[in-house]
Length: 310
Image (cartoon, rainbow, N blue to C red; front, side, top):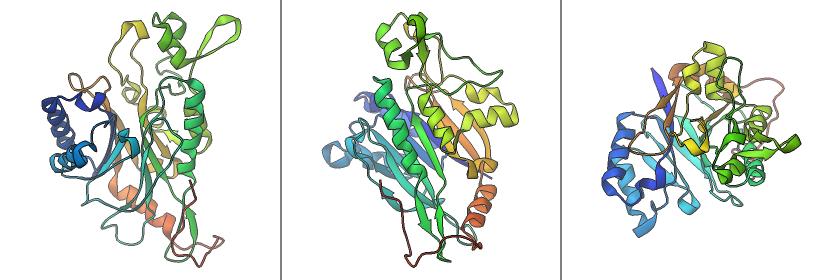
């Protein structure tokens, strides 16, 4: 049985068109995700949270909208419970971050840190700082029932507004120097030697160095499914060829349970396609059980729950 996590930048939250808004949410519901990460939920908390409540009803999920309504995160309450969350500040578009614990897992399991994020689109320098700040969600700790302090695994999904590091046989980085939209060229690249422009892959490099692999990259390298690397934005010729700027970073601990990554067509509903990461549920539960099990040599604490400060 698979456990699906979906991330989707829903363009301008439907732009005030309630028909488009409902059609998109009904489509998300049809995917039956265990976790749904959304970006651009700008009006979700307007009118005392009218659309936030409506989203939970249409999706049949429990949700949280981050401060500023930049991001949201929804869970299937039959699959996960969420014992806590984390607020953060200093972002242009603040992420929504929750600890998720599997239900009915036959024993203690570690929670997973789930993060819906939307990195800034207009500055490589600001995006570099935000990407580095994302590593704070890889630094959460939890005290197990045996008293051991264990670092939590994470799944981070969202719109990166930058590129993944290419792999042999995979799509090349876009030739940003050919972009006729000079503003977009500046947003997505850094100055290089001799007046060249270098596509921005900094955040992907930082997250991978910190121990969170790009999920699509892992599927392509491990299983040979290059379709996982397909573009996630609709064609805009002045901004170069279609590329992948949406996706997941997944802690290496969880990668053995990662079964597939799929790009889901959102044409007519958004300017970004959704991305679905599929995990083997039993394999995921087994990894989280073994990580929570007592083990010699672990640091122990008398504090029952603990998390690293943001």
